[in-house]
Amino acid sequence: MPNIWDSVLLLPKLARLASRVPKNPHHAWENYWAGITRTGKDGEVLWDAAAESERLSYLAPIKEHFDPALPVVDVGCGNGTFTRWLASLFPQVLGVDVSASAVRRAQAEAEAEDIRDVEFAAMDAVADGAGDLLRERLGGSANVFLRGVLHVLKPEEQARLAANLHTLVGEQGRVFLAETNFQGNRFQYVGHLGATRRGIPHPLRRAIEGLPMPGHFGQPELSEVFPSSEWQLLADGPAVIEAVAMKQDSVTEQIPGYFAVLQTN
Image (tube, rainbow, N blue to C red; front, side, top):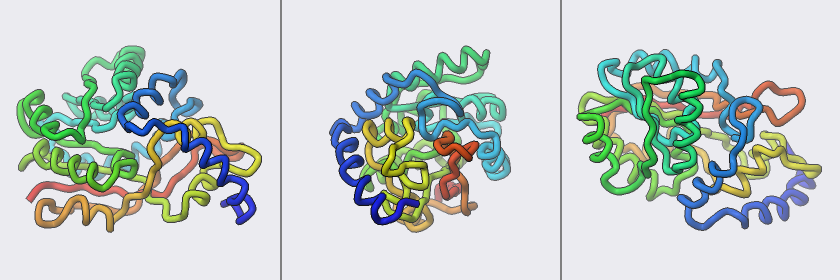
C-alpha cells in the first residue's frame, strides 16, 4: 500500500484522471468499451482476468441454488467472459450490458470460441421496467449472475437494480452476486492494484479516467439494498475478485470481495 508521501503525490494525478470521466455513466461505459482493443488476462480491462480459480469458487453456490431449468441472466456482462462460462453450465444464458460496444465484443468473443448457446443484449438493467422486459423476453423467471456491478452504482441505482431483479427472479429464480469489498481508502485501493508515485498500470489508469468511481459492497450494503422484508439470504461469505496482473510478481491482482445468494420472500 502507498505510504503518506505516495498518497500526496498520487492525489493530483488521480484527480486529473478522474476529471476526464463523462458525467453521464451510460456515456462513460460506452466510451470505455468502444476504446478497448484487448481483453483477457493480458488485456486492458481491469476486472477481466478470466481466472479459473475465481470461477471455481463460485461454482458450488451456483450449482446448489440455481434451478437448472431456468435461464440465467448475466447482468453487466461486459465482454461476456462469465457469460460464456455460465453457458457451459446452463442451457439458456443471456448477457446484458448498458454498453452496446461491450455487447458487440461479447458476441464476437463468443463466436470466436464457437459458443452458440448464449445470447447478448444491450440493456440498462437499472432502468425502470427492465425486470419486466427481461421476464417477457425469457418467458418468465430467471436466475441472475451479478459480478462487480453494485459497487459502481449510486445507492438509488442499486435500489432500482434490486427492484428489477426482484421482478425478474420471481418465486423460482435466485440471485448470485460477487462484489469487491476492499475496506481501505482510495489511495490504498489503487496502491493494492499497483499504483505508485512512479506510475499507474495501464488497465487501472483506463478505469480511473473512464469510469464512475467504485465503492465497496459487503454485508452491510447488502442489508440496505436487499432488505429482509423483500429478500431471503441463502448463503454469503468472503470472495476474491481477480483482476488482471499489474505488478511484476503477480499472476492476477486479488481484491477482497463478498458473495451472496438471495431469493425473494
